[in-house]
Amino acid sequence: MPELPEVETVARGLRSAVLGRRILSVTLGKTDFIDDPVALEEHLPGRRISGVERYGKFMLVRLSAPDGEPRSRVEGPAPRDGESAPGALLVHLGMTGQVGAIAAAQPRKKHTHVCLLLDDGRELRYTDARRFGRIAYLMEPRLAEELTRFGADPLEVTPEEFAARIRMRRARIKALLLDQSVLRGVGNIYADESLWRAKIHPARLGASLTRKQAATLRRTLQEVLCKAIEMRGSSISDFVDAAGEPGEYQRRHRAYGREGQRCYRCKSHIRRAIVAGRSSYFCLQCQPAPRGCMPLPLPLPKKKNAPASKRTSTRRQKRARHAETKETD
DNA sequence: CGTTGAACCTGTTTGC
DNA sequence: TGCAAACAGGTTCAAC
Image (tube, rainbow, N blue to C red; front, top):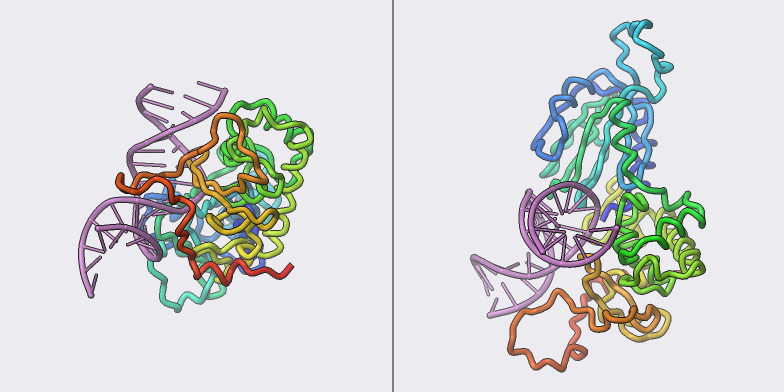
């Protein structure tokens, strides 16, 4: 789940927690999700954390130039000391990645695979049970390259550019929203939430959106993302920020994860279907399906003896979620 | 160009 | 009660 708002929340937390700290040493656990583990061990010790930025769902932990070594002037324009320079740690949280700084003496949680000992006695730790995340140490030529494959920042994109990126495409709008080369940072939750608010069905083709709909979608997407950042992200299962605190935006969800519950606008029931290969939640009433995808089927067949008629009857509720969907506008 | 499905990985939920 | 299949979802890649 870490999408743009969650990553932004973590990045902010990290900024206030470890900015300016020097890395003394590196300890690694499993490394199959790290581009070049040896590079971490070789290049991080001695460097200071000079900045933490978010780029889509990535965090960029900027590192100051190594300062033990007298940087030779002849090698070209050396970056001003201390400022973002030659290298950065690219961190993607995947789905279960967590980062935070705590006293080095504290026992490490299970699945902690990267520990950076800092000069204040704490450790910056990366924990990721599923290891869907990614960590890479990249130096400037390659870093910039790496970032070129991403699309526009959803919070910065102009109405014109947004429309251009969506309305010329024949792919489904849901697929486009999730495509990091179209927009960087949107994931399943905020795609569904913005589509619900814009009253657009996820299976619509990008090219089928009117200018007005594209404009509306851009606006609802930005509203949803901004509000989510304000509320420190959505904690569906295990997201926590850099301080270990969960977010609150899950209380504002109107579509995501609400299958079978009533639509906040029209009181019909929220449905779920697989669109663009992902579970998608929407209100068929508010978000009319495009022609020819009427009964967009679910993941589906469990048994073949089920009396095919009672798909609307028994709906087991998740009471765990009940308390969370309450609202406080 | 687009879509689909598999694979990666493991904790949690669901089903029998 | 217990075990196993299903699920979850970000990203990439192969296949159609």
